[in-house]
Image (cartoon, rainbow, N blue to C red; front, side, top):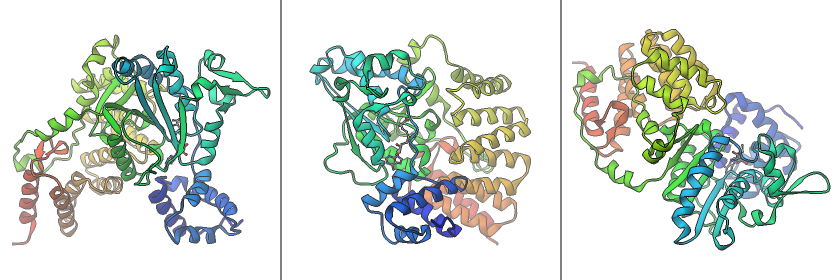
Length: 494
Ligand SMILES: C[S@@+](CC[C@H](N)C(=O)[O-])C[C@H]1O[C@@H](n2cnc3c(N)ncnc32)[C@H](O)[C@@H]1O
């Protein structure tokens, strides 16, 4: 099998796979893509990988082609009771509250594990439910697991697992909920198995098959799946989840994916060591009641500081906050930051990088770098920001911050490069265009500046005039358009 494929063709394939399957292959992962597609080519009956790629690119992928590609391109890393803090939040807070609410009404609970892999995640949820609901036989429980990889789904359907699926799990789990098979494997108990069903679903496909009812869920888990998608795909999948949830329903993603900026339509709720998202229809009402802020143009021109909405992380759900006995370390560090105690915040964020629960959260890198930046230590700010960028190449906020730091350092060209990455990941970022416009202007690149301002204006015109822009400290879209118009006229000759 030929492994030599022109770079440009591989790039086309990468874009195509991203569009059709959501999977994003960064430059660093191009070899994984090549390896996967070479194996798929064999299964499709091609002796030449390049020929197979050309065949794949010739028309939109059919279900069968996606199934074969998924077999070689998806990552099947999973295990029971993954991420103890999320499991705790589910077992102690989220599930008991739903059970309590439904006990005297419909006695129905619907949960969706999207990207369920070989079933460890939905079965874990079914086990939790059976522990919480003693009379579960008289309830209507739906735990749906969906995935794009049919081999994973076959395994899930069989419900038979080996030791590796139980890494990091308590001993009683195997003892109580599985039967040991003759060849030393573990088969899930039938009473748990009957609570769970599995189905094929490509999350980035717009239409869902009719036989799948993807509405009215109380919880959607989509953990360690979004991290393989590009930013636009992530946003569109999250919107779809929002539509599929009941009011007050929960969306749970992996801890490294829980960057709250990506979930503006949800309420962010902080459980000890776990960030989850709750649909709350009343937020739609308050969004509609935007407050108008006013601002002077002069204040705005150097407006390159991104306003991250940390309050959402802190004030997520009062009842839960009140019950939480000890404040978790992340909240403590954010509090230091909010109070302007940047040195203390930096020290605490640094220690969080050694905590497995937080080490995978890009917000820790962002806040650590910002803490240093706020003490004036730009060298360390850049150091931590770059480390974050290296780890989370899809996290646009890190590039945004990188741009800010470079700008502070006077390295405007580098700041422009960082902003290009922001736009690549967030093509709708009017803020990035606006700041790029300012920088280009400072560098004497008037043509580029004009183009950037035009793009920013175009994007802003897609909004309601009264929409409040959190990126610009609450100024409205209408006011911002006015600012840009003034800036454009200021720079036109004569
Ligand atoms: C790393 S596993 C995560 C499994 C489980 N959610 C967990 O956290 O343990 C990622 C899963 O996402 C699935 N996946 C990837 N792209 C998908 C897509 N476009 N639609 C549905 N599932 C997808 C993969 O097949 C794989 O099973």
